[in-house]
Image (cartoon, rainbow, N blue to C red; front, side, top):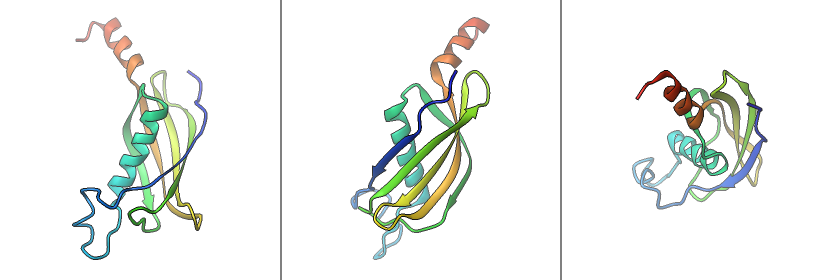
Length: 123
């Protein structure tokens, strides 16, 4: 399995996202878990065969507001084993290029796991 091409994409979290009314009333901030969900959605759109199985590190360094454009960069850092890849992500506010978050991801190839389970007789 070879390491995949880097991913670069821009996204926004809409002002009507269901997590925003309580986070924080009158001063909406996009929760970190919503940013991680956006990272996952971008990954799945580019590589639907992979699932995030672990986020061993995530650091949020700047507030992200609703409707604010965020640049996402994902770089593959290598294979853990035949089914698992590691990657690093960076989020930055698009207009100001201010870093907003960084972290690491571990992903698993669903088809490779299913094939291994079939060979082992696991159902």
